[in-house]
Image (cartoon, rainbow, N blue to C red; front, top):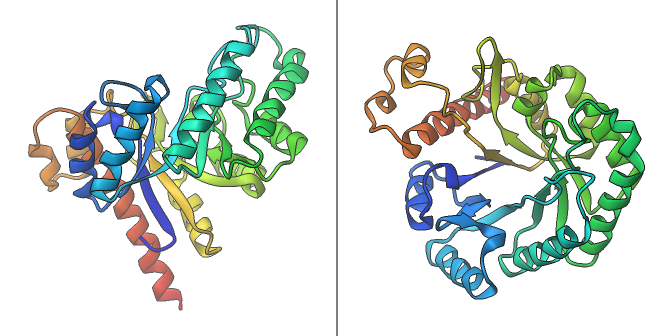
Length: 293
């Protein structure tokens, strides 16, 4: 869709890669942010299994936008060395699958403690990961996840500015910021913008506290994507539906004439809600841009 390339966490559709690709093709999506595949986490696969996944993708004309890794999703007080070994294997997987990016996190902070206490150790670990990635052609993407060091835009910016590497960029995840009580736009967006390389498409509300399809929450997806579009910056938009608490009845109130309402319950239906909402939003932005010319 023009400068936006759509991708998805397709394990939310189902465990089987072939089924995932069947559904993605219905929406013209040919990229995957691979987190889970064929019933287990991508990084839990052997090299032989990864090569088999590569063949499956190639046979259908699919590529990875990113490896949706669990790297950095451990406590900052946990032993780092085994995790570093897992990261090195994750890098190898990314190279085999020709993924340009690896998604990672900046370590869970002990509950109730000041994150500043752990800043130096977080920076040491993140800098080590970035150095490991140098020369591989893979860029590391930090996701703003709740309860990690970089769960606020201020601490994300601290990491990105301090490490200051072309191999280390930001993912912007609106729903995650909302769940941390952060205003996504303009506040968080303008703080992170200079480091922004990738979007996770999750919107959310606070009352009730749930993830919702793009454009129906308080994540300001329209404003954010419109600004990115106006600057002509190519970017992956990776759908991460997380719509398990968003009911088909709620969707029917928003889109009463949608055929999705009549789809069988399951991952394909929740993905359809997410995908059609994002595509609708992008088309609105593109149409408005044409009218301004």
